[in-house]
Image (cartoon, rainbow, N blue to C red; front, side, top):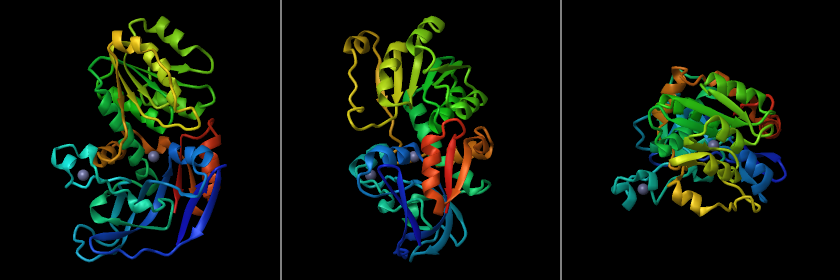
Length: 336
Ligand SMILES: [Zn+2]
Ligand SMILES: [Zn+2]
């Protein structure tokens, strides 16, 4: 079967690898679509000095059943959880499955591949969505997670920094959670993304390459932000801290390398404004049922998020498009 790998600088390689037959309680999935995540782009651009499997936003259909599998049948459409809690470790048993100590992570198999073999309890059945659209259920669970950690209050003012797919979906979720005003921060090249942000409910769009974001926010929203959702590069946390209102929560999602992961901030500001900085990491990956329902009902229209589709053989082009075409791309999906 074909599988996709990537490494720095923005290289992709299609390999031929053996198909793994499902063992007891495992299922083989014929992968039909795999989203290209910002993390995949990051890996291709900066992180992977050796080849790393592409893709973790995987959907497909059941192609083979291991011994003892009763929940699925051939042809069922399924979401693959890129990370699942075990349900039996100390934290899981103490009602904190989000802090599972023994997560199951796709056994490091590429998501961008013809087949993937998974434990059956790491799959969730769906219908009513094309595969390429169902592939964004995974980034939507990430957006649900960051909105969850930020505990959006009713009638609040929320800033979402970063108009990638997760930030865009977070705009809508913030509104659904009760925000009165949502301000999206992006930059002027991200034309397609900012347009979708407005459709999803952004009341104001701030262009970080055109104005000083902190000054703009202070002038326009002098009370400050009740919540800030940071999906932009980690160094923008400094702006988030400055624009935050007294008692605000900052929901943060982001990684970086090469020195960019080091951010220095004024602790007095955190102390006196009583800010809470809360990390979101949607691992284990939960809330697929909610994500799928929101997509199916077009509360978040997947057709507006998925802008580009490439076949598996064109993984190189898919990565290039996702990494370098800010004007047109919202989300790239690979069909496998
Ligand atoms: Zn992702
Ligand atoms: Zn566990």
